[in-house]
Amino acid sequence: DIVMTQSPLSLPVTPGEPASISCRSSQSLLHSNGYNYLDWYLQKPGQSPQLLIYLASNRASGVPDRFSGSGSGTDFTLKINRVEAEDIGVYYCLQTLQTQTWTFGQGTRVEVK
Amino acid sequence: EVQLVESGGGLVQPGGSLRLSCAVSGFTVSGKYMSWVRQAPGKGLEWVSAVYSTGSIYYADSVKGRFTISRDNSKNTLFLQMNSLRAEDTAVYYCAATRDYYYYGMVVWGQGTTVTVSS
Image 1: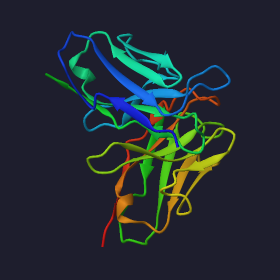
Image 2: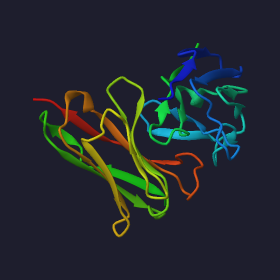
Image 3: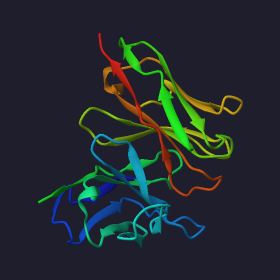
């Protein structure tokens, strides 16, 4: 199975400052169709997860443009160029390349410093 | 309005069964990727099962042989039949879906339903 490793697991942030989360996979997530099957989700306190980024670098509808996703193969990054208070929560990466088993990362808790 | 509403959770004894439902409104379940994801108390997200837009079905090893995912196009509903439940199945169960035939991320999520397995 593909193992997803996020870092850091805890990220204190200052509103207005940038933030970055890494997600590494134990196998390449690059499909033969040219897409990397890696999503990013945010679970705000007390809420269901919400999609931020799909296929590594595509912002979901309604997601602010301060969020961006990058990377290919086994190394991926979620960046927030200016953190806002509403961005607090736990961020998860998810691989869906391996059809038999989708895998989430452990989660990165983003909190205000 | 696009909405997923889970139901069917509750308290069940080890070895028992439950059937979760995910009622969909605002789009049709047919031809979409649909999935169940769970979250044990205080833990992260764990993928449980998925049915692809093609109809192919997949399960996590932890539930294979015990859980069955299905969708009823006429009822526009996704189901998860859970048998031989164990204490470690205790979690909030979320259903999630794409809005398209092709995979563009699980864009719609339900509010979750709580399953507690305990004697």
